[in-house]
Image 1: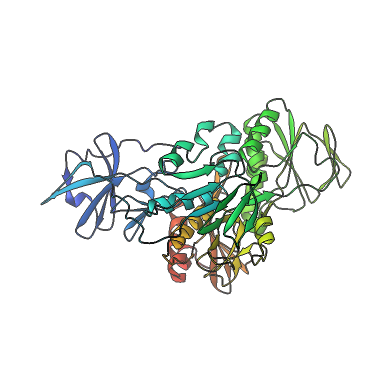
Image 2: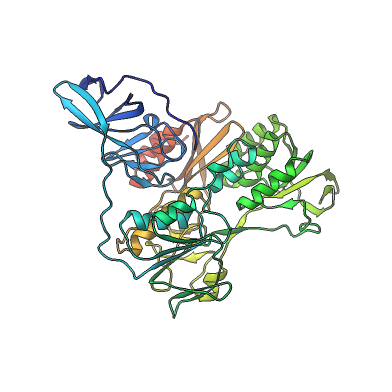
Length: 515
């Protein structure tokens, strides 16, 4: 899915001067009809595919860090030497090419055969993953890519293969992404990798003592290791009429399809909640020609996460595209053709979408007696309080090494990376979860990237111009940079993430100087 890197630059198959590739830098070209990126690391020059395997981002605009390259769009990370997708959101490897370095000339030859995964030296008798979202899918894929040969089961409850959930409120809902883009993997993938995938394998109970999961209908699945990836459920409105047939939440493929079907005959929609999901839904419905009102109790959308300045700019962009805001109020009732607000006004509505947040799905964990604290409590290797049980994604609350607090993050990329880490730890790797969270949010032609995690701050510093859509914004507390948001500065977002990983506050202060 996504775009493609056009063939540009020199024909590397015909050869170029070695001096054309700068030390520590890269050069974009092509060979054998494919976009290829040359990267110099000392005397070594490697050649890899130049197009990210997630959404087709241009790796020539990315960041080389050590033996890796990172995509500027959504921060996928690949090995320069093997092409392996080291970090989500990309799950497919990049092609690698043989390079002939003869004196002062470099020639890119054909594709190199990918490395075969090493067989895992050890592992449990079997692995059951409960939840077929981003985290669950990444977990089973990593188990197989790491060479685990034992039985693996992936139990979903949404009736579909794992889907590209961010697109439910973005391009798919707006009508810009075809349905065939939405599955991360088809069922054939799981068959080919010997994964027992059940799209409707709803789990009713965990039997930790017996090391089994009990499914609706009475079936049981034994496990040697269990990974909980149960995700979150959307909050429901607590007002009269909230259960009416024209009122929707958005979490699943079925939800998005239902909103699209209703929007086809709708003239006006009311979105309740100025959350990221709520505002993305508003933008997508406007793209379909529906008039949209947004109702929310705050005075500036997204200010709690992004601060007043970015929140106000996002609001302005929506208003420029015809979205009407009703802030500082909330709905008191939903009627057949309208939404009644607490201030007594009435908004016409053929369609209502509630974007008022989500809650982690803790039902199985609570029933099983796992330690809970606004999420399933896990250690720095994502292990729960029960032996042989891990928790990942929206449901997990883990110790964040940067803030010193336990955090729970509802981001797609974080969920996938947690799934990858848990899989390695199930196999005995003892990998620490030290993820620097990342997410992106699209509002018409405005995209905001966010790196890190700041639940509060005592200052916000801005480099560049938010109004001019060329800015990096740092959220700081006690002199420490907790998060950076960027608009129009994709590389700065990559640099911020790398600096946070390295604990390099000096680099972060240089990126966004304190005002």
